[in-house]
Length: 313
Image 1: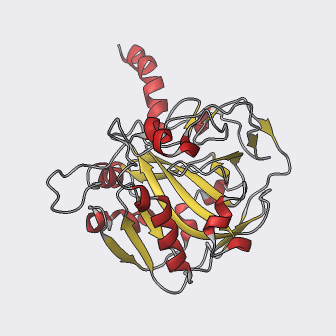
Image 2 (image 1 turned 135 degrees about the vertical axis):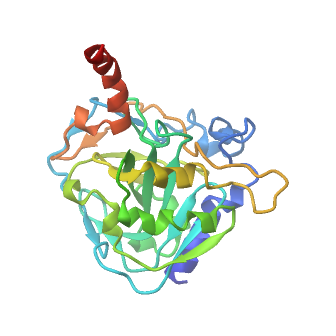
């Protein structure tokens, strides 16, 4: 089984197999109801759920340096696939990239990346910073190489999956790197639609000047089956895209198939925050420990609005 077949199978296992029971906007199948049909998603049964709120209640780990991202800075051979699976927009990559180091317990093969977003520029990310959400969050999913291509075995290992979480904030200027994907969103607007993507250096979607600043904790997949098998690395510094690029996701993606009787937009595809239950959450040696610089730009503007209005009156 090659990497594309593995990713397709992985994606189907995680998402498409649960399409009839897994949603974000209906009471019977939204995240608060997942535990009714998927016991491992019930927060009472197991305490290691994701996402979580990241705040000052963490400890610095001086052994946590930058991760080694093999192949992220080169153009990989082959072809990648962008797909709307009804729950998110996912980029399925070919074999050639690997994540290791930074305190991870092994080497991890990169499978795919996908996005979570809200309905406006003030919400969207799954993890929160001091209770505040970024407009979007990108997850780069990696499977422990020793299990590849048996992802079922990886999900049975508490550290079988390593996910890199990257916050996405908004700015005036467009991101040329992000436009490679955002410009293809209209082609995958409806569930089941795919588009071919010429490989590009995946590092262009990362905060490359701040890769040693992150938070680490053990948690779960944020979609059914909510397997408690994830070593999370959530980067402190976001990447930036334009409002137009954000709106391509917020207003241009649907969780229904083309031609469906009810065409339903896809947004607010993030799971609610879960308690850490005294889990250890570590800040890397270079992390700023949630200084004001780590807050979303939009949130900072909201905080400053009363001050600015007084100054202008």
